[in-house]
Image (cartoon, rainbow over all chains, first blue to last red; front, side):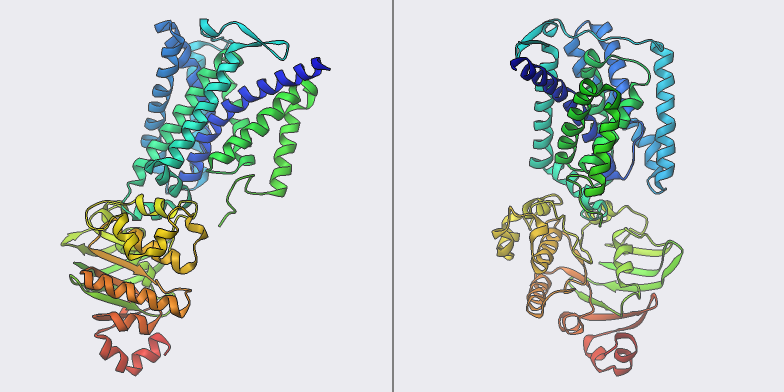
Length: 291
Length: 228
C-alpha cells in the first residue's frame, strides 16, 4: 500500500518538475501572443538554444550556476534582436506572415544547433551539489528535480509579483486587453513589446538550461516542446499567468502519469484533455471570452 | 492649440475623412456633432494617431503630429477619453489610473478628490464598475497624464440622464480649469450647452461651423444633419 503511495508520490513530483518548466515556457508564449498578437513558433527554439548555450557556458566557465545566470540574459538578447529586427516590420501584416517567419526561423535555429553541436544527444550534468538522490515516499528521487520544483515555484511567484504588483506589470496586462488604448495614454507600446518578447525569450532559455540535466539535449527538443507549450497555452487561456500555471500543471501531470501508466497513449491523453477543454471553454480554462 | 487642415483619412479602403479642417483654441470647448458614421470618431482617431491621415496636417501646439506615433502624440499633451470608455477591465481602478500617470498637477489624490466614487472603488477591477463610473474612470485616467487638450468621444453614450448631467458638470469644471476640449457628442443639449463653438459633420466633411446659438437657431442644419 505504502509502495503504491510512493509510486504516485514520486510521479507527482516528476510531474511538478515538468509542469513548472512548461509554465515558464507557456508564460512567455502566452504573453507574447496575448499582447502582441504574434504566435511565436520559434519559442521552442529559444528553449533549445537555452539548453545548448547553457552547455557552452558550462564548458567555458565550469560553473553550472554562472551558466544559469548567463543563459537567460543571452537568450533574452537574442529575443530582443529577433523582435526588433524581424518581427516588428510584420505587425501590420496578418498572422500568416508572422507564422511563416517564426516557423522559418525555427528551422534556421535547428540547423545552427546541428552545425555547431552536432545531431547527437548531449547531456548537461546536474550541478555537483545536486547530483545525488534524496529519499522521498520511501523511494529515491534526484535532488536536482527537487531543485527544479523549488526554482519553478519561486519564479512563478516572482512573475506573479511582477505582473500584479508593479506598474510595468500593469502596463503589460493592460496591453493584453487593449494595446491601442495603452499607446493612447502615451506609453511607448513598441518598447513594451520588445521587453515582453525579451522576457519571454529569457524565460524560454532559462527553462532550457534548467531542463537540460533532466530531459537531455537534442535537435528536435524544440518542436516537441513547442507543441506541448502550445497545448498548455490553448488549455490555460491566453495572456494570463493563472492560465499558464494551471494549464501547465494539468498538461504536465497528465503527460507524466500518462507516460508511466499508459505509455502508448501518453500524448493522446494530452490531446484529449485539450479537446475536452476546447469544447467546454473555447477560450481556455482562464481565458477571456473573445470580444 | 489644435488645428486640423484638410485632413483625409482612410480606414482600409474606405475614404472616411474627406478634407476635415477644424480648430480648438487654448481653453476652448469645441463640440463636434453629427449623425452616426459621419467620421466624428475617425477625426478623434486621426488626431491621437490611431488612424493616421493619408493627407493633410494636424497641428498641435504648432507642431505637425500627423505622422507621429500615438504614444508620442499623447505625450505632447493630449488626453484621450475614447468612445466606449475602454477602461482596462482586469486592472484595478488604481492601476488604470497610474499606468499613464505623468507630469504635475493631476495625481491620484486630486483625481480621487474630484471623483470620490473612484476612491471608494480604488481596489476594485474596472470591469466591475457601472457605466457611469467607468466613464469617470476614463476621464480621470486621461487627467492623470496631465494633458492640455482633452479629446472626449461621446462621454454620455449609453448613460442614464442623471449620470449624463453629472458628466456635464465634470466637463464644465474641466473647462473652468482651463483645459482645451474637443467634445464629440450625439447629445445635442450636452454638446451645445457647454461649447464655445460647434462643428457639424456629414459624410466626412464639416458642414457647419459656428456658435451654439447660431446652431440652435439653424433649423435647416439641425434637421438635415442632426435629425432634430
